[in-house]
Length: 301
Length: 301
Image 1 (cartoon, chains in turn brown, blue):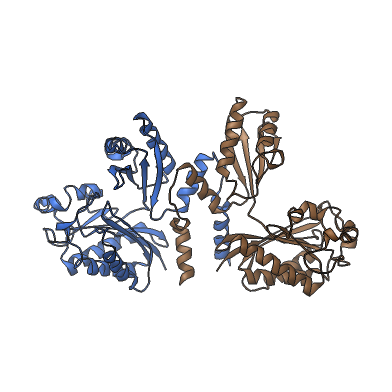
Image 2: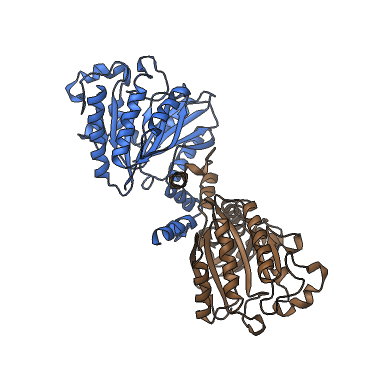
Protein backbone atom coordinates (compact mmCIF):
# COMPACT_ATOMS: atom_id res chain seq x y z
CA UNK A 1 0.00 0.00 0.00
CA UNK A 2 1.34 3.39 -0.97
CA UNK A 3 1.32 6.44 1.29
CA UNK A 4 0.44 9.68 -0.49
CA UNK A 5 -0.16 12.99 1.24
CA UNK A 6 -2.89 15.38 0.05
CA UNK A 7 -3.21 18.94 1.37
CA UNK A 8 -6.47 20.57 0.15
CA UNK A 9 -6.73 24.32 0.75
CA UNK A 10 -10.32 25.52 1.09
CA UNK A 11 -11.63 29.12 0.97
CA UNK A 12 -13.32 29.10 4.38
CA UNK A 13 -11.53 29.87 7.64
CA UNK A 14 -14.14 31.73 9.69
CA UNK A 15 -17.34 29.66 9.87
CA UNK A 16 -15.81 26.78 11.81
CA UNK A 17 -19.04 24.73 11.75
CA UNK A 18 -18.65 24.66 7.96
CA UNK A 19 -15.00 23.58 8.29
CA UNK A 20 -16.15 20.87 10.73
CA UNK A 21 -18.61 19.58 8.13
CA UNK A 22 -15.83 19.41 5.52
CA UNK A 23 -13.55 17.55 7.95
CA UNK A 24 -16.38 15.10 8.70
CA UNK A 25 -16.86 14.47 4.98
CA UNK A 26 -13.15 13.63 4.62
CA UNK A 27 -13.10 11.42 7.72
CA UNK A 28 -16.10 9.43 6.46
CA UNK A 29 -14.02 8.04 3.57
CA UNK A 30 -12.53 4.63 4.46
CA UNK A 31 -8.74 4.33 4.00
CA UNK A 32 -8.08 8.04 4.51
CA UNK A 33 -6.65 9.60 7.65
CA UNK A 34 -7.06 13.28 8.41
CA UNK A 35 -3.70 14.09 10.08
CA UNK A 36 -4.12 17.79 10.59
CA UNK A 37 -6.45 20.74 9.94
CA UNK A 38 -5.87 24.41 10.52
CA UNK A 39 -8.05 27.44 9.86
CA UNK A 40 -6.94 31.04 9.52
CA UNK A 41 -9.54 33.78 9.99
CA UNK A 42 -7.52 36.59 8.40
CA UNK A 43 -6.78 34.44 5.35
CA UNK A 44 -10.34 33.03 5.56
CA UNK A 45 -8.84 29.72 4.53
CA UNK A 46 -8.45 26.19 5.93
CA UNK A 47 -5.78 23.60 5.20
CA UNK A 48 -6.40 19.86 5.61
CA UNK A 49 -3.62 17.28 5.67
CA UNK A 50 -4.72 13.79 4.71
CA UNK A 51 -2.85 10.60 3.88
CA UNK A 52 -3.82 7.37 2.20
CA UNK A 53 -3.45 5.34 -0.96
CA UNK A 54 -4.44 6.83 -4.35
CA UNK A 55 -8.03 5.60 -4.65
CA UNK A 56 -9.21 6.55 -1.12
CA UNK A 57 -7.56 9.98 -1.47
CA UNK A 58 -9.36 10.64 -4.72
CA UNK A 59 -12.65 9.62 -3.06
CA UNK A 60 -11.88 11.98 -0.16
CA UNK A 61 -11.22 14.91 -2.49
CA UNK A 62 -14.52 14.27 -4.29
CA UNK A 63 -16.29 14.05 -0.92
CA UNK A 64 -14.69 17.36 0.04
CA UNK A 65 -15.99 19.05 -3.13
CA UNK A 66 -19.41 17.50 -2.53
CA UNK A 67 -19.52 18.98 0.98
CA UNK A 68 -17.92 22.33 0.11
CA UNK A 69 -19.86 23.38 -2.99
CA UNK A 70 -23.30 23.84 -1.36
CA UNK A 71 -21.73 25.65 1.61
CA UNK A 72 -19.18 28.02 0.03
CA UNK A 73 -19.78 30.94 -2.33
CA UNK A 74 -16.74 32.85 -3.58
CA UNK A 75 -18.92 35.77 -4.69
CA UNK A 76 -19.16 36.77 -1.03
CA UNK A 77 -15.73 35.50 0.12
CA UNK A 78 -13.14 37.90 1.48
CA UNK A 79 -9.69 37.10 2.86
CA UNK A 80 -6.02 38.04 2.65
CA UNK A 81 -4.90 34.90 0.88
CA UNK A 82 -5.04 34.73 -2.94
CA UNK A 83 -7.65 32.20 -4.23
CA UNK A 84 -9.53 31.28 -7.39
CA UNK A 85 -11.84 28.59 -6.04
CA UNK A 86 -13.94 27.24 -3.18
CA UNK A 87 -11.67 24.18 -3.05
CA UNK A 88 -8.76 26.31 -4.15
CA UNK A 89 -5.69 24.05 -4.35
CA UNK A 90 -5.24 20.29 -4.06
CA UNK A 91 -1.62 19.01 -4.18
CA UNK A 92 -0.71 15.32 -4.01
CA UNK A 93 2.72 14.48 -2.53
CA UNK A 94 4.50 11.09 -2.77
CA UNK A 95 5.64 9.85 0.65
CA UNK A 96 6.29 6.12 0.61
CA UNK A 97 5.76 3.41 -1.97
CA UNK A 98 4.52 5.95 -4.52
CA UNK A 99 6.39 7.86 -7.21
CA UNK A 100 5.91 11.37 -8.51
CA UNK A 101 4.49 9.77 -11.67
CA UNK A 102 1.84 8.07 -9.51
CA UNK A 103 0.90 11.43 -7.99
CA UNK A 104 0.76 13.13 -11.39
CA UNK A 105 -1.60 10.41 -12.63
CA UNK A 106 -3.70 10.77 -9.46
CA UNK A 107 -3.90 14.56 -9.93
CA UNK A 108 -5.07 14.15 -13.54
CA UNK A 109 -7.69 11.53 -12.70
CA UNK A 110 -8.95 13.54 -9.76
CA UNK A 111 -9.07 16.72 -11.85
CA UNK A 112 -11.07 14.97 -14.59
CA UNK A 113 -13.47 13.53 -12.01
CA UNK A 114 -14.00 16.91 -10.31
CA UNK A 115 -14.78 18.61 -13.64
CA UNK A 116 -17.13 15.82 -14.78
CA UNK A 117 -19.02 15.54 -11.50
CA UNK A 118 -19.21 19.14 -10.35
CA UNK A 119 -18.75 21.21 -13.51
CA UNK A 120 -15.80 23.03 -11.89
CA UNK A 121 -12.95 23.95 -14.29
CA UNK A 122 -9.62 22.45 -13.20
CA UNK A 123 -6.05 23.61 -13.85
CA UNK A 124 -3.21 21.14 -13.34
CA UNK A 125 -0.08 22.60 -11.71
CA UNK A 126 3.51 21.85 -10.66
CA UNK A 127 4.63 18.36 -11.76
CA UNK A 128 1.17 17.66 -13.21
CA UNK A 129 1.10 20.87 -15.30
CA UNK A 130 0.16 20.45 -18.97
CA UNK A 131 2.55 23.24 -19.98
CA UNK A 132 5.34 25.28 -18.34
CA UNK A 133 3.18 28.42 -18.01
CA UNK A 134 0.96 26.50 -15.58
CA UNK A 135 3.64 25.06 -13.32
CA UNK A 136 3.53 27.87 -10.77
CA UNK A 137 0.46 28.33 -8.61
CA UNK A 138 1.05 32.10 -8.50
CA UNK A 139 0.73 32.33 -12.29
CA UNK A 140 -2.55 30.38 -12.38
CA UNK A 141 -4.02 32.37 -9.50
CA UNK A 142 -3.10 35.83 -10.83
CA UNK A 143 -6.22 38.07 -10.78
CA UNK A 144 -7.91 35.68 -8.35
CA UNK A 145 -11.58 34.62 -8.45
CA UNK A 146 -12.71 38.13 -9.34
CA UNK A 147 -10.58 38.21 -12.52
CA UNK A 148 -11.21 34.59 -13.49
CA UNK A 149 -14.04 35.01 -16.03
CA UNK A 150 -12.04 37.59 -17.97
CA UNK A 151 -8.91 35.48 -17.97
CA UNK A 152 -10.66 32.27 -18.97
CA UNK A 153 -11.91 33.99 -22.13
CA UNK A 154 -8.27 33.91 -23.28
CA UNK A 155 -7.62 30.58 -25.10
CA UNK A 156 -4.20 30.42 -23.35
CA UNK A 157 -6.14 29.83 -20.14
CA UNK A 158 -8.57 27.14 -21.26
CA UNK A 159 -8.67 24.79 -18.25
CA UNK A 160 -7.22 21.29 -18.40
CA UNK A 161 -10.63 19.84 -17.53
CA UNK A 162 -14.18 21.19 -17.45
CA UNK A 163 -15.94 24.25 -18.87
CA UNK A 164 -14.03 27.29 -20.21
CA UNK A 165 -15.81 29.53 -17.71
CA UNK A 166 -15.77 29.74 -13.91
CA UNK A 167 -18.27 27.82 -11.82
CA UNK A 168 -20.59 30.61 -10.57
CA UNK A 169 -19.99 30.10 -6.86
CA UNK A 170 -16.95 27.76 -6.78
CA UNK A 171 -14.67 29.40 -9.38
CA UNK A 172 -11.93 27.03 -10.51
CA UNK A 173 -9.68 24.52 -8.76
CA UNK A 174 -5.94 23.97 -9.07
CA UNK A 175 -4.95 20.34 -8.68
CA UNK A 176 -1.44 18.94 -8.99
CA UNK A 177 1.51 16.97 -7.72
CA UNK A 178 4.63 18.19 -6.02
CA UNK A 179 7.49 17.08 -3.79
CA UNK A 180 7.30 17.57 -0.04
CA UNK A 181 8.41 21.05 0.88
CA UNK A 182 11.02 21.54 3.61
CA UNK A 183 11.07 24.80 5.58
CA UNK A 184 14.75 25.16 6.47
CA UNK A 185 16.56 28.03 8.19
CA UNK A 186 20.26 28.59 8.80
CA UNK A 187 21.27 30.96 11.59
CA UNK A 188 24.54 32.85 11.19
CA UNK A 189 26.86 33.55 14.11
CA UNK A 190 26.37 37.21 13.26
CA UNK A 191 23.80 40.01 13.29
CA UNK A 192 24.68 41.09 9.75
CA UNK A 193 21.42 41.13 7.81
CA UNK A 194 23.33 42.23 4.69
CA UNK A 195 25.34 38.98 4.75
CA UNK A 196 22.18 36.86 5.20
CA UNK A 197 20.62 38.65 2.23
CA UNK A 198 23.71 38.17 0.05
CA UNK A 199 23.79 34.47 0.89
CA UNK A 200 20.06 34.12 0.17
CA UNK A 201 20.58 35.79 -3.22
CA UNK A 202 23.49 33.45 -3.96
CA UNK A 203 21.59 30.22 -3.31
CA UNK A 204 18.04 30.90 -4.51
CA UNK A 205 16.85 29.96 -7.97
CA UNK A 206 15.35 33.34 -8.80
CA UNK A 207 18.75 35.07 -8.66
CA UNK A 208 20.92 32.32 -10.15
CA UNK A 209 21.23 29.79 -7.33
CA UNK A 210 19.98 26.24 -6.93
CA UNK A 211 16.93 25.13 -8.91
CA UNK A 212 14.77 24.12 -5.92
CA UNK A 213 15.62 26.79 -3.35
CA UNK A 214 13.55 29.82 -2.35
CA UNK A 215 15.42 32.00 0.14
CA UNK A 216 15.47 35.34 1.89
CA UNK A 217 17.66 36.98 4.49
CA UNK A 218 15.97 38.09 7.72
CA UNK A 219 16.99 39.28 11.19
CA UNK A 220 15.41 37.50 14.17
CA UNK A 221 14.14 39.32 17.24
CA UNK A 222 17.28 38.30 19.15
CA UNK A 223 19.40 39.95 16.45
CA UNK A 224 20.59 36.76 14.73
CA UNK A 225 20.91 37.02 10.96
CA UNK A 226 19.09 34.13 9.31
CA UNK A 227 18.92 32.63 5.83
CA UNK A 228 15.27 31.49 5.67
CA UNK A 229 14.50 28.92 2.97
CA UNK A 230 11.96 26.67 1.34
CA UNK A 231 13.49 23.59 -0.29
CA UNK A 232 10.99 22.47 -2.91
CA UNK A 233 12.71 19.29 -4.07
CA UNK A 234 15.15 17.77 -1.60
CA UNK A 235 16.00 14.91 -3.95
CA UNK A 236 17.39 17.20 -6.63
CA UNK A 237 18.64 19.99 -4.38
CA UNK A 238 19.64 18.17 -1.16
CA UNK A 239 19.75 19.83 2.26
CA UNK A 240 23.44 19.00 2.68
CA UNK A 241 24.45 20.77 -0.53
CA UNK A 242 22.48 23.86 0.47
CA UNK A 243 23.98 23.84 3.97
CA UNK A 244 27.56 23.46 2.67
CA UNK A 245 27.03 26.26 0.14
CA UNK A 246 25.65 28.61 2.79
CA UNK A 247 28.66 27.80 5.04
CA UNK A 248 31.07 28.56 2.21
CA UNK A 249 29.31 31.78 1.21
CA UNK A 250 29.21 32.91 4.84
CA UNK A 251 32.95 32.21 5.23
CA UNK A 252 33.61 34.53 2.32
CA UNK A 253 32.29 37.34 4.57
CA UNK A 254 34.17 36.04 7.61
CA UNK A 255 30.92 34.77 9.16
CA UNK A 256 30.34 31.32 10.68
CA UNK A 257 27.18 29.22 10.77
CA UNK A 258 25.70 28.98 14.25
CA UNK A 259 23.08 26.29 13.67
CA UNK A 260 20.33 25.24 11.31
CA UNK A 261 16.67 24.47 11.89
CA UNK A 262 13.91 22.49 10.20
CA UNK A 263 10.46 24.01 10.73
CA UNK A 264 7.61 21.49 10.82
CA UNK A 265 7.87 18.11 9.16
CA UNK A 266 10.65 16.58 7.08
CA UNK A 267 10.60 13.29 5.16
CA UNK A 268 12.90 10.66 6.70
CA UNK A 269 14.53 10.29 3.27
CA UNK A 270 15.84 13.87 3.42
CA UNK A 271 17.69 13.15 6.68
CA UNK A 272 18.89 9.77 5.42
CA UNK A 273 20.26 11.52 2.34
CA UNK A 274 22.21 14.00 4.51
CA UNK A 275 23.70 11.13 6.54
CA UNK A 276 24.67 9.34 3.32
CA UNK A 277 26.32 12.48 1.96
CA UNK A 278 28.45 13.29 4.98
CA UNK A 279 29.34 9.73 5.94
CA UNK A 280 30.19 9.00 2.27
CA UNK A 281 27.85 6.03 2.58
CA UNK A 282 28.13 3.80 -0.43
CA UNK A 283 25.49 1.36 -1.66
CA UNK A 284 23.10 2.27 1.14
CA UNK A 285 19.54 1.13 0.46
CA UNK A 286 16.53 2.75 2.15
CA UNK A 287 15.32 -0.64 3.33
CA UNK A 288 18.45 -0.97 5.47
CA UNK A 289 16.68 1.32 7.91
CA UNK A 290 15.33 -1.03 10.56
CA UNK A 291 11.97 0.71 10.90
CA UNK A 292 11.43 0.82 7.12
CA UNK A 293 12.23 -2.87 6.85
CA UNK A 294 9.80 -3.69 9.64
CA UNK A 295 7.00 -1.73 7.96
CA UNK A 296 7.69 -3.39 4.60
CA UNK A 297 7.53 -6.79 6.27
CA UNK A 298 4.27 -5.79 7.95
CA UNK A 299 2.74 -4.90 4.62
CA UNK A 300 4.04 -8.03 2.90
CA UNK A 301 2.23 -10.33 5.28
CA UNK B 1 3.18 -9.35 21.04
CA UNK B 2 6.80 -8.40 21.59
CA UNK B 3 9.25 -7.64 18.79
CA UNK B 4 12.72 -9.04 19.41
CA UNK B 5 15.48 -9.00 16.86
CA UNK B 6 17.88 -11.91 16.47
CA UNK B 7 21.00 -11.70 14.30
CA UNK B 8 22.71 -15.07 13.87
CA UNK B 9 26.21 -14.91 12.34
CA UNK B 10 27.15 -18.07 10.45
CA UNK B 11 30.60 -19.12 9.24
CA UNK B 12 29.72 -19.43 5.56
CA UNK B 13 29.78 -16.57 3.09
CA UNK B 14 30.98 -18.17 -0.14
CA UNK B 15 28.79 -21.18 -0.94
CA UNK B 16 25.59 -19.20 -1.46
CA UNK B 17 23.48 -22.32 -2.05
CA UNK B 18 24.32 -23.32 1.51
CA UNK B 19 23.35 -19.86 2.78
CA UNK B 20 20.07 -20.19 0.83
CA UNK B 21 19.34 -23.48 2.60
CA UNK B 22 19.91 -21.83 5.99
CA UNK B 23 17.61 -18.94 5.07
CA UNK B 24 14.93 -21.41 3.98
CA UNK B 25 15.17 -23.20 7.33
CA UNK B 26 14.60 -19.90 9.16
CA UNK B 27 11.73 -18.84 6.90
CA UNK B 28 9.93 -22.15 7.50
CA UNK B 29 9.36 -21.26 11.17
CA UNK B 30 5.90 -19.69 11.72
CA UNK B 31 5.88 -16.34 13.53
CA UNK B 32 9.41 -15.39 12.43
CA UNK B 33 10.24 -12.92 9.68
CA UNK B 34 13.64 -12.97 7.97
CA UNK B 35 14.22 -9.26 7.41
CA UNK B 36 17.67 -9.32 5.91
CA UNK B 37 20.60 -11.51 4.97
CA UNK B 38 24.03 -10.61 3.73
CA UNK B 39 27.06 -12.71 2.86
CA UNK B 40 30.68 -11.61 2.70
CA UNK B 41 33.14 -13.68 0.71
CA UNK B 42 36.31 -12.24 2.25
CA UNK B 43 34.95 -12.75 5.75
CA UNK B 44 33.40 -16.06 4.63
CA UNK B 45 30.49 -15.22 6.87
CA UNK B 46 26.75 -14.54 6.59
CA UNK B 47 24.51 -12.47 8.79
CA UNK B 48 20.76 -13.07 9.12
CA UNK B 49 18.35 -10.61 10.70
CA UNK B 50 15.11 -12.05 12.02
CA UNK B 51 12.34 -10.64 14.17
CA UNK B 52 9.55 -12.20 16.14
CA UNK B 53 8.37 -12.99 19.62
CA UNK B 54 10.55 -15.06 21.99
CA UNK B 55 9.22 -18.58 21.34
CA UNK B 56 9.25 -18.43 17.50
CA UNK B 57 12.74 -16.91 17.54
CA UNK B 58 14.06 -19.73 19.70
CA UNK B 59 12.50 -22.25 17.30
CA UNK B 60 14.15 -20.45 14.36
CA UNK B 61 17.59 -20.55 16.00
CA UNK B 62 17.22 -24.29 16.61
CA UNK B 63 16.12 -24.76 12.98
CA UNK B 64 19.20 -22.81 11.86
CA UNK B 65 21.54 -25.07 13.87
CA UNK B 66 19.72 -28.09 12.47
CA UNK B 67 20.33 -26.89 8.91
CA UNK B 68 23.87 -25.55 9.47
CA UNK B 69 25.54 -28.43 11.32
CA UNK B 70 25.43 -31.02 8.49
CA UNK B 71 26.56 -28.41 5.92
CA UNK B 72 29.38 -26.52 7.68
CA UNK B 73 32.75 -27.81 8.89
CA UNK B 74 35.04 -25.34 10.63
CA UNK B 75 38.03 -27.65 10.14
CA UNK B 76 38.14 -26.54 6.52
CA UNK B 77 36.80 -22.97 7.00
CA UNK B 78 38.96 -19.96 6.11
CA UNK B 79 38.01 -16.30 6.27
CA UNK B 80 39.16 -12.95 7.59
CA UNK B 81 36.57 -12.75 10.33
CA UNK B 82 37.32 -14.34 13.73
CA UNK B 83 35.03 -17.26 14.60
CA UNK B 84 34.77 -20.17 17.02
CA UNK B 85 31.70 -21.91 15.64
CA UNK B 86 29.61 -22.86 12.62
CA UNK B 87 26.73 -20.86 14.05
CA UNK B 88 29.21 -18.47 15.55
CA UNK B 89 27.20 -15.81 17.37
CA UNK B 90 23.49 -15.42 18.19
CA UNK B 91 22.47 -12.14 19.84
CA UNK B 92 18.93 -11.24 20.88
CA UNK B 93 18.03 -7.52 20.82
CA UNK B 94 14.95 -5.93 22.41
CA UNK B 95 13.06 -3.75 19.88
CA UNK B 96 9.49 -3.21 21.04
CA UNK B 97 7.41 -4.61 23.91
CA UNK B 98 10.36 -6.63 25.26
CA UNK B 99 12.96 -5.76 27.89
CA UNK B 100 16.64 -6.59 28.07
CA UNK B 101 15.73 -9.04 30.86
CA UNK B 102 13.38 -10.84 28.43
CA UNK B 103 16.22 -11.15 25.93
CA UNK B 104 18.64 -12.40 28.59
CA UNK B 105 16.14 -15.12 29.58
CA UNK B 106 15.62 -16.01 25.92
CA UNK B 107 19.40 -16.28 25.35
CA UNK B 108 19.77 -18.64 28.33
CA UNK B 109 16.87 -20.87 27.29
CA UNK B 110 18.06 -21.00 23.70
CA UNK B 111 21.65 -21.76 24.79
CA UNK B 112 20.49 -24.62 26.98
CA UNK B 113 18.36 -26.02 24.14
CA UNK B 114 21.21 -25.79 21.59
CA UNK B 115 23.60 -27.64 23.93
CA UNK B 116 21.05 -30.32 24.80
CA UNK B 117 19.90 -30.95 21.24
CA UNK B 118 23.13 -30.62 19.24
CA UNK B 119 25.92 -31.22 21.77
CA UNK B 120 27.45 -27.85 20.89
CA UNK B 121 29.06 -26.02 23.84
CA UNK B 122 27.51 -22.58 24.40
CA UNK B 123 28.97 -19.43 25.96
CA UNK B 124 26.62 -16.67 27.09
CA UNK B 125 27.86 -13.14 26.33
CA UNK B 126 27.13 -9.41 26.76
CA UNK B 127 24.08 -8.78 28.96
CA UNK B 128 23.49 -12.54 29.29
CA UNK B 129 27.09 -13.30 30.40
CA UNK B 130 27.48 -15.45 33.53
CA UNK B 131 30.58 -13.49 34.58
CA UNK B 132 32.38 -10.29 33.52
CA UNK B 133 35.21 -12.16 31.77
CA UNK B 134 32.63 -13.43 29.28
CA UNK B 135 30.88 -10.18 28.45
CA UNK B 136 33.02 -9.42 25.41
CA UNK B 137 32.75 -11.55 22.33
CA UNK B 138 36.44 -11.00 21.55
CA UNK B 139 37.51 -12.53 24.84
CA UNK B 140 35.40 -15.61 24.23
CA UNK B 141 36.59 -15.90 20.64
CA UNK B 142 40.32 -15.41 21.33
CA UNK B 143 42.34 -18.15 19.62
CA UNK B 144 39.33 -18.87 17.39
CA UNK B 145 38.12 -22.33 16.42
CA UNK B 146 41.68 -23.62 16.01
CA UNK B 147 42.61 -22.76 19.62
CA UNK B 148 39.30 -23.79 21.14
CA UNK B 149 40.15 -27.33 22.35
CA UNK B 150 43.23 -26.07 24.21
CA UNK B 151 41.33 -23.23 25.82
CA UNK B 152 38.36 -25.29 26.88
CA UNK B 153 40.71 -27.55 28.87
CA UNK B 154 41.08 -24.54 31.22
CA UNK B 155 38.32 -24.70 33.91
CA UNK B 156 37.95 -20.91 33.57
CA UNK B 157 36.50 -21.57 30.12
CA UNK B 158 34.02 -24.29 30.96
CA UNK B 159 31.03 -23.39 28.77
CA UNK B 160 27.75 -22.19 30.23
CA UNK B 161 25.94 -25.10 28.60
CA UNK B 162 27.04 -28.34 26.94
CA UNK B 163 30.26 -30.39 26.87
CA UNK B 164 33.62 -28.97 28.01
CA UNK B 165 35.11 -29.70 24.59
CA UNK B 166 34.44 -28.31 21.10
CA UNK B 167 31.96 -29.95 18.76
CA UNK B 168 34.28 -31.58 16.15
CA UNK B 169 32.96 -29.67 13.12
CA UNK B 170 30.82 -26.91 14.69
CA UNK B 171 33.15 -25.68 17.47
CA UNK B 172 31.23 -23.62 20.03
CA UNK B 173 28.49 -21.00 19.86
CA UNK B 174 28.22 -17.67 21.60
CA UNK B 175 24.65 -16.68 22.47
CA UNK B 176 23.56 -13.55 24.29
CA UNK B 177 21.56 -10.36 24.59
CA UNK B 178 22.60 -6.82 23.71
CA UNK B 179 21.51 -3.39 22.49
CA UNK B 180 21.21 -2.77 18.70
CA UNK B 181 24.59 -2.93 16.99
CA UNK B 182 25.66 -1.16 13.81
CA UNK B 183 28.07 -2.99 11.51
CA UNK B 184 29.97 -0.14 9.93
CA UNK B 185 32.97 -0.25 7.58
CA UNK B 186 35.11 2.58 6.24
CA UNK B 187 37.08 1.92 3.06
CA UNK B 188 40.35 3.80 2.63
CA UNK B 189 41.50 5.13 -0.75
CA UNK B 190 44.56 2.94 -0.23
CA UNK B 191 45.69 -0.69 -0.09
CA UNK B 192 47.72 -0.11 3.09
CA UNK B 193 46.55 -2.71 5.58
CA UNK B 194 49.01 -1.30 8.16
CA UNK B 195 47.18 2.06 8.07
CA UNK B 196 43.77 0.39 8.45
CA UNK B 197 45.12 -1.52 11.45
CA UNK B 198 46.62 1.59 13.05
CA UNK B 199 43.33 3.45 12.65
CA UNK B 200 41.38 0.52 14.07
CA UNK B 201 43.71 0.49 17.09
CA UNK B 202 43.23 4.24 17.54
CA UNK B 203 39.45 4.18 17.64
CA UNK B 204 38.54 0.93 19.38
CA UNK B 205 37.86 0.72 23.09
CA UNK B 206 40.23 -2.18 23.74
CA UNK B 207 43.28 -0.13 22.80
CA UNK B 208 42.23 3.26 24.17
CA UNK B 209 39.63 4.50 21.67
CA UNK B 210 35.91 5.16 21.95
CA UNK B 211 33.92 3.28 24.57
CA UNK B 212 31.43 1.62 22.18
CA UNK B 213 33.64 0.84 19.18
CA UNK B 214 35.09 -2.49 18.19
CA UNK B 215 37.38 -2.29 15.17
CA UNK B 216 39.90 -4.16 13.08
CA UNK B 217 41.87 -3.42 9.93
CA UNK B 218 41.35 -5.78 7.00
CA UNK B 219 42.18 -5.88 3.29
CA UNK B 220 39.33 -6.66 0.90
CA UNK B 221 39.65 -8.97 -2.10
CA UNK B 222 39.97 -5.97 -4.43
CA UNK B 223 42.93 -4.72 -2.37
CA UNK B 224 41.10 -1.93 -0.53
CA UNK B 225 42.21 -1.40 3.06
CA UNK B 226 39.17 -1.28 5.34
CA UNK B 227 38.48 -0.29 8.93
CA UNK B 228 35.79 -2.80 9.89
CA UNK B 229 33.76 -1.84 12.95
CA UNK B 230 30.94 -2.69 15.26
CA UNK B 231 29.32 0.29 16.96
CA UNK B 232 27.71 -1.12 20.09
CA UNK B 233 25.93 2.00 21.34
CA UNK B 234 25.31 4.62 18.66
CA UNK B 235 23.65 6.96 21.15
CA UNK B 236 26.81 7.34 23.22
CA UNK B 237 29.39 6.85 20.47
CA UNK B 238 27.71 8.28 17.33
CA UNK B 239 28.56 7.22 13.78
CA UNK B 240 29.53 10.75 12.79
CA UNK B 241 32.14 11.07 15.54
CA UNK B 242 33.66 7.74 14.57
CA UNK B 243 33.70 8.65 10.87
CA UNK B 244 35.34 12.03 11.51
CA UNK B 245 37.98 10.43 13.75
CA UNK B 246 38.81 7.79 11.14
CA UNK B 247 39.14 10.52 8.49
CA UNK B 248 41.51 12.48 10.71
CA UNK B 249 43.62 9.46 11.64
CA UNK B 250 43.82 8.42 7.97
CA UNK B 251 44.96 11.93 6.98
CA UNK B 252 47.84 11.60 9.43
CA UNK B 253 49.17 8.82 7.14
CA UNK B 254 48.37 10.75 3.99
CA UNK B 255 45.44 8.49 3.22
CA UNK B 256 41.91 9.59 2.26
CA UNK B 257 38.59 7.93 3.00
CA UNK B 258 37.01 6.43 -0.13
CA UNK B 259 33.55 5.62 1.25
CA UNK B 260 31.79 4.05 4.17
CA UNK B 261 29.28 1.26 4.37
CA UNK B 262 26.57 0.09 6.75
CA UNK B 263 26.17 -3.68 6.65
CA UNK B 264 22.63 -4.84 7.29
CA UNK B 265 20.16 -2.74 9.22
CA UNK B 266 20.51 0.53 11.09
CA UNK B 267 18.03 2.23 13.42
CA UNK B 268 16.55 5.37 11.81
CA UNK B 269 17.65 7.32 14.90
CA UNK B 270 21.33 6.69 14.08
CA UNK B 271 20.96 8.31 10.65
CA UNK B 272 18.86 11.16 12.04
CA UNK B 273 21.61 11.77 14.59
CA UNK B 274 24.26 11.98 11.84
CA UNK B 275 22.15 14.47 9.88
CA UNK B 276 21.64 16.57 13.02
CA UNK B 277 25.40 16.55 13.72
CA UNK B 278 26.55 17.63 10.27
CA UNK B 279 23.73 20.07 9.55
CA UNK B 280 24.16 21.58 13.04
CA UNK B 281 20.43 21.03 13.47
CA UNK B 282 19.17 22.71 16.56
CA UNK B 283 15.99 21.85 18.50
CA UNK B 284 15.07 19.02 16.15
CA UNK B 285 12.43 16.66 17.57
CA UNK B 286 12.05 13.07 16.33
CA UNK B 287 8.34 13.61 15.65
CA UNK B 288 9.27 16.21 13.03
CA UNK B 289 10.05 13.23 10.82
CA UNK B 290 6.98 12.83 8.64
CA UNK B 291 6.94 9.04 8.82
CA UNK B 292 7.22 9.09 12.62
CA UNK B 293 4.25 11.44 12.74
CA UNK B 294 2.31 9.08 10.48
CA UNK B 295 3.04 6.10 12.73
CA UNK B 296 1.96 8.07 15.79
CA UNK B 297 -1.33 8.78 14.00
CA UNK B 298 -1.62 5.05 13.26
CA UNK B 299 -1.35 4.23 16.93
CA UNK B 300 -3.75 6.99 17.94
CA UNK B 301 -6.59 5.57 15.87
